Length: 394
Image (cartoon, rainbow, N blue to C red; front, side):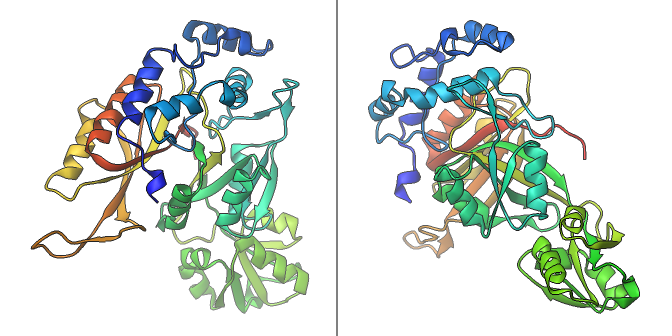
């Protein structure tokens, strides 16, 4: 995992490049912006967009000089795509996610969005909420969605990272550190479980209920009162598909309304979850970061670790508090690499990785200064993405 860590020079160097407009690297002026978006061209003209492609969430060069080299003219196709998207991309009102665009023609293209599960899964619904005109691409496992996006099989991945009842989905937080993707948007999706069965049955006919273990647990009170046997399967929509394909009578699936439509099942009851405030936070991932846009609230997600010493976390969080930057998430968990440390004459303890979300974009000078100060204290730091915050209403 050593390759994930940024050298001490990267954050200050990024700040200098941003502040100086990357004068000695590559400046993309208004001439690089396609004609259709006049307001975007005007904005670009004022700011003279300067971009450095640092790789997934941070500088990738072994030194500042190599980072500059990575951002020079041989990277221009990547930078051109980013600048073009900034000029003509439209934001979805729900998630702030970008529509796709063919840089060669300037026309919109239909994004392929990877998600985990079968058609009718809640992840598919979240993908459609983020990108309403997309072509959803089902994947068997979370890893497959990451790989599909990295390998250009898909343009985006939309995956769950947090649930209001179950907490963080740690597998995806691990995977985002193992893959070279950026967070480019978020969607807060309200989960509404339904009891589905083949047509011609009533609730009294149901003897068994199948679904994902988490969905079953979220409806445990309802299913227990119904007096059915709960059976765990891999996927909510997969349960509906299997029941429909096998023509199983007396068996119900706990799944979404969309699954009922896709697999021609009858909805016996809606909103059967025990807790009505069941919300999942999905994050949209892409190969390239997006350029900050003015007038839109942004979040930035980072992961970092600190030296094992008194007050280290306080010092890390003070980097943001001193600049009035609001934190929306703080979570720690043991590192997957080098998990246990033991200092001389001290007991063993875990080494922790901290995940922090804060309200600012990487174009914000306060955010740059906070990360530069944090980099001086951290043993590891990675920017996972800077993206429009979901300001919709559930």
